Length: 502
Image (cartoon, rainbow, N blue to C red; front, side):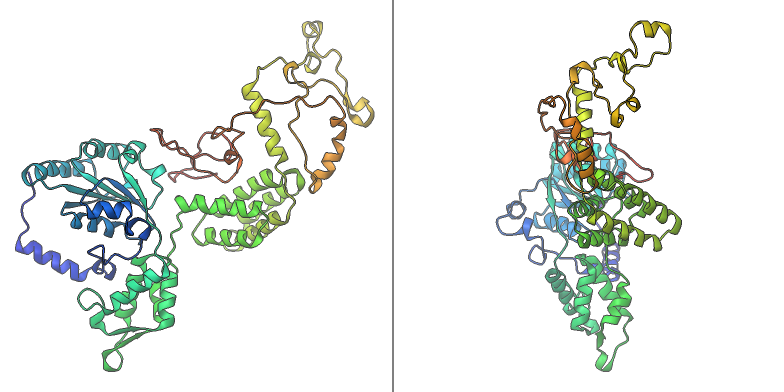
């Protein structure tokens, strides 16, 4: 049964709530002409703009940072197309709420031929069962779903639901867009701060736009706090200075989430900057992560990984140095331990680099996985019993320390892998000396060629799988999304977060 019509008291209550709402809510654009930013999806000729203008709605996922306009855009879409708008929050709603909304949508469609847009804010907070409950009704057109999320839909929205909705990426607003929104709010007498006669100093405006970090909600609410707290001056005017904005905003609006998308993007940027030997960019990304609340021990673990993977035998001291840094962080805590991380980042950037051992081990693992497991050569086997000695175990084994230079040329591989070469040291750093010490090996039997393995995603032959910065690989054809680290290992989880890197 459809909901009863709103009474006069309901209208008065809604009007009062609108007056008391924060500035960001009061200034929410009501039409596409008022909407600022997101030209990449709403510009002339774009798919979403054409669909709205043609009243041809389809289900969609709006993915973007906080304050980029996801909720506002959903409301505009519903009002522009004359559809009924039904908002839900995944934080508080459950399957019972979804069933009620779907039932009302059925009646609304049959009685009034009106479509229902169901807007689910923070849709990534719905579990699998709740997301699956929406599927059949999106499939048969009972509802048009608009989901909003700050998290990557590839990992937080079920593949079946993603396949029935188009994903649109909203970007953080630029400084010019935020400036325009601030100016509009200052001069709007009906919904904004026009009646307050507030004036915003030029440097205060720049400061506000800068620290809002592309978040319209943060900018407008900080502006309102500064205006409300400012006592009127001569003529009732309020001059808002940079100190007023600084006190109202307190700190830069940050979108960093140590369990979210930027966590993976930032650690990837840090890893690649170190790999390329850029200490300045590496220190910047380190600062971004620590400023966003990242666990310093997580960063320390990643630096240990970089020392193993990207520095390797070119500088064998890199690994013990990183272990010492990890211990320093454990001993000192923050903020003192942060400087240890900064030292570690610079050390790794200047160190000679080699991934020869990493590549060699990957090649050895590929042979383990792809070749027949022939027996261990008899002369390499221990022979603790008479029976084993009678079978030839240990016969012919040459003890290295009895030979010149403690080096023996005897068969160490199974018969089917004789002549394999995995490790090819570089001429960088300490590994140049290692290369010289292994020249005896190259004078022996020429290395046996290895068949080229196809570069399948997640295999040792796949360059991205060997990149070492927690790549996020998703199979979009009905498979559950997976996070892959740099090797084809099972996905790891660290409680209590929903998905964490190593």
